[in-house]
Length: 260
Image (cartoon, rainbow, N blue to C red):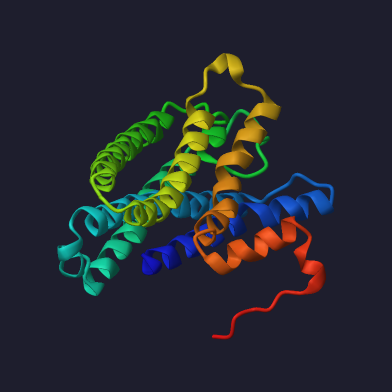
């Protein structure tokens, strides 16, 4: 689990650094400009980190399924080499899809201006600027990606159905609590990631506005990577004690950190 969390942290860091620094620099310098190459790089890296993260979240659901539903086989099924191969597959699949999307998108002629209604470059906004019928190739790739994501989503749902059925059969209340504390952070991250992205891209056209699009873009591109470390670290007892002391004003007397 901690090996996959390390990969998730790296992907979250990559997602944040792809969009936020440029947006902050533009805000500080009071400009909205971005070069063509910077825009292409931003699209590539943002899409790469997003797709790889969703693949990794799917793998983590399988990891939780094996750990809870087949605990005696866990070390055999989820061996170190298997975990490395699965993580490499997540990164590799994200890279492959991103190469196809980026190459298709930036091969299109832009004849509807060069102004994006977004604080970072993303494929749907760039496609709006194209007047070529070739954009149908990219739409086809997007449809294929949606089918792939839907398949991963179905796998996630089925995995957690099996997990919760197994957890509810645990006779010990302490055992159920431990299992839920392991699964619920991952489920919260998946829900936040999927719900914001799906609503951003599948909302009705009548709800489209520049301010709403900006808000949704922040929710699915910035919020999940920023909140993921907090959600997972809340399983740490020492951290929860520190947060509770901060909330209750207990830090005024100092905090004694346990020695390692």
